[in-house]
Image (cartoon, rainbow, N blue to C red; front, side, top):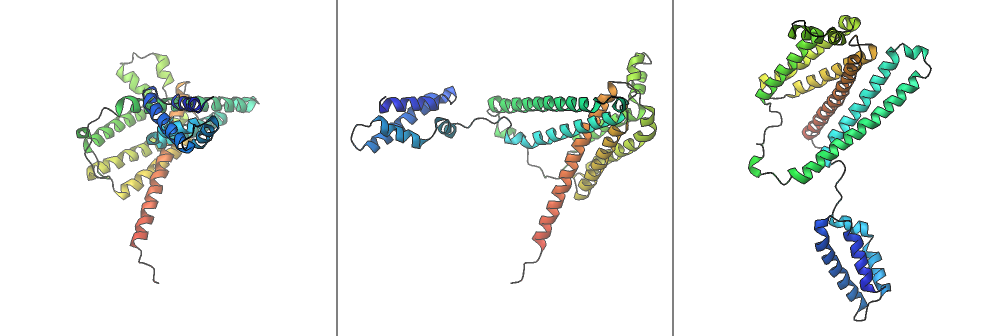
Length: 321
């Protein structure tokens, strides 16, 4: 094998790892660079295969060289990394709470020795499937952003810079009305609302599926309704003020943490709806919202603590020498 043949094989090994549209230009550039470098090392004599081998080994593995020209797109982009981690933690925490709730509340757990192992296996399978699905969704979002969205933008279309604590009052008002309507439906009971909307023509099986469990309605629901109402009042307070203050941010974080604890307690304590599968779906939703609440509230409180510590350090008098 001649020196030129070895360089040609090396260039091919590098370019085959690159996107098609880059192979010709980078191949020509790399071939010229290596040929020039080899001629310089030969010092006027005809370069042989041994000299070319030394040059290429020092240049690096073809895969490493290819990555220097073109970074492989990540499965999850940096922009989406934090959201992916948050959703993954929330999903896994919700599954764990739901599995524990089923194990504690299902009568079969007391009589079936294999019940706990079966629930653990089903939870693990659901966790792997859910994380796999989440990974696919984020990969598709990143691929779409790289392929179609990044080239279709205009500086004139960029949003105006706003104060970080400013509140969009129309959007906040719409959100408050939506949350208040949802709370009203929950308090009245989905079955009652369905019966009222349909004029009593809703199927009995549908109404039975969305009828609250008696113990939930009497013992746990009132606490949940109060916490939800307070959680709606906080953004209303922010909308009136037109900004998010440090006080409202702390109150919101604490309320969210209390609401998450209440949701976890409801999931573990027993049924929400009297019939399945509506009960299990509702408990899963509560566990997911509870996990989201824990993550967001603890994150907000941690940021507030960091801010206060930074402000204290900035206002502290300089140390005397």
